Image 1 (cartoon, rainbow, N blue to C red):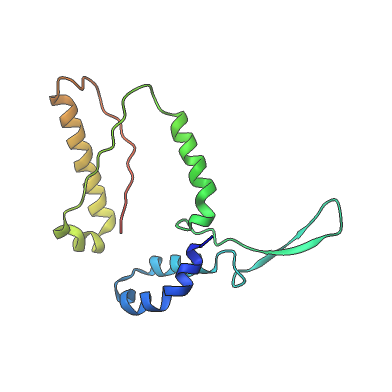
Image 2: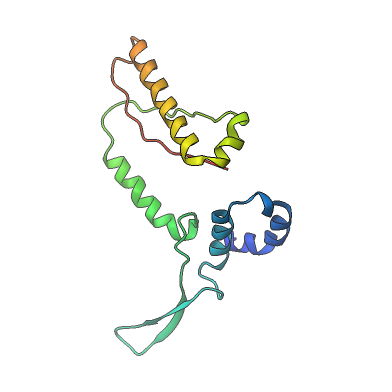
Length: 148
């Protein structure tokens, strides 16, 4: 099975030579962490069998929040908790996209711009639900920010 670490290992030099000036420090940190995750480059821990004398060393995971290898279990648990919290109602997915003209501003001030975007999206959903006779209810939302 191909891993993200092997893809990074194969293409990292070309990728960084092309895009390093456009990457944020946290993106470069994620790249390096995921590349080392559970490989010979990562620190190791000793594991001992309780029933016999067998001992082995296994590499640590990176634990980075963007590592799909490390966070799969946590993501799955989060999804299961969200499904249990669902109320018996219709659910819809609405997507709000930041206009391309505002992306440089969002890159400079992400917390402020994305907070304002969520406020505008929420106000829009509330307005639609109040003005539409068929919706007849107060909206609720789970929001997720997807960035490139």
